[in-house]
Image (cartoon, protein in one colour):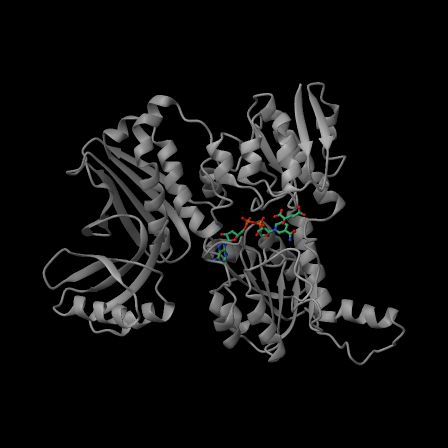
Length: 530
Ligand SMILES: NC(=O)C1=CN([C@@H]2O[C@H](COP(=O)(O)OP(=O)(O)OC[C@H]3O[C@@H](n4cnc5c(N)ncnc54)[C@H](O)[C@@H]3O)[C@@H](O)[C@H]2O)C=CC1
Ligand SMILES: O=C(O)CCC(=O)C(=O)O
């Protein structure tokens, strides 16, 4: 008999199939503290949660029999994936079941902020008949900017068209063709910020999306914009937003999510007359809660019964012989993927992975998964992309993945080379494991280099002229950025060249911009590899 613990309020109808199963017993104990959960989790084979239960490393450690954690919803930021993977605990989610519900909540919020519904309600039930203070705006003929055109963003765009809105969309995976098919204008974040009347965000929270709308964006924003966040707290800088509302740049905002949930009593949104809020209700409909619970219960049943399952968010097993050969390259592969994703501009269309050397003798799919994970994590967030789903997510986004193999290793025992083709450009990075030196990047585009793929890197593209190194050193030094290592690569004397610097800390954005002002320097890019 398998024991399943449900530790958040999850639809009864959704978990009915678990309760009906002869080989499963279900305990429902919502609202447990971490200590209480740690005390009892040892007896369970599966744990089902929504977003309240924090499934921490302590919980995983105490879950000696735990085989699966099921998240009835999309975001798995309340689950320690690393701790689960280390212990062989499968984490699954239900990515599709609450898409429409969250999209509809976004619309409810957008209309509520356009027509001041919550404020007007409060006054009316308070006995004041005030028809003057709440003159709203129509959605029709307004421009809606959608940041994040995944499942929810795409549904929002579809519905906004029915309201007569013009849609500008931005997503690193949105191609011109798809945008055209959807009848939306493919735009940059800046275009949207400058031109939209309404803006809604539907990205995960990643280092790249954290505060993607902040002070700099509010400074150039079209005055009178209305902003909605039903995705994740932190995508929009909360304090910069309040300032922008107070300055009259933003006419109103509607937030379902907060940087810290629940927000503290003195959070500036809570008493602001132009900001309306809901307590993370995006997925809270009867239908969505049933959908996600049914989905996740079904997969938990499969996992416990050792049957094929889908929507795993972490790692599957790999045969021992393949693992022996490939494992040393996993971390390098992921870093090459992350490197090339950060380097390349434009919507990704094709990934080409070339394996040279004896690594090409085995099934390289597990290594390709690592590379693709590195690429996709940069855009989709590491919480969502993993080794089980990286290829699936790539396919879902229409990315072509080409694998090439050759036994000739071009001077190295093994060489991994990753080429990313986008609408704008094609870039290449190659790496290897050097005996005694560990992982190295040995080629960037056409340039041979020798760089450890770790930490904070700056890639400078320049002309091969005397004095460049001095200028770069002076610029970084005067901005208190210490250079740890420096590598230059060129094909011909006096031609195009690159410089790769390892620095001790992140580089302020304005310093990167300053690089391009220096003579004979074309551009500089920061690449962060963890
Ligand atoms: N309020 C709530 O209760 C709910 C919130 N959510 C949240 O909504 C968000 C979207 O969910 P889905 O649409 O299901 O996810 P999804 O994965 O289908 O879409 C996210 C999209 O964001 C894009 N993206 C990543 N980085 C970006 C960037 N820098 N700029 C623009 N786009 C970027 C990705 O390419 C992807 O297409 C997630 O954060 C999810 O956790 C989801 C369900 C309920
Ligand atoms: O379970 C919930 O209500 C939270 C939903 C959510 O934010 C998600 O699925 O990412």
